[in-house]
Length: 124
Image (cartoon, rainbow, N blue to C red):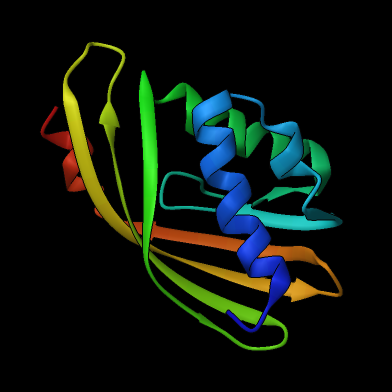
């Protein structure tokens, strides 16, 4: 992986999924960061927005673990293909795929966009 910020993001996300502590992940974002996914009508902004984004993400599952299948990175951008597996709070298993796009400024994530198979959630 050519970009250390992207490598750190992937490792920190996996740590956050295991520990439930979003702060180490929030610390990777720029103060004026924008985060969005298919559920949000408007991006969440700033460190408070990053904290809410990742807290909401973890809150959607009883447990979750992301496996990165491919990472394509340049100096200031990356595309990550992943599969996430876990359980919903009901105990029902879930598995879904997606792609995340990161835009990087310096050593911080400035923009984070996530696109995923939302049908996995509607079937539960």
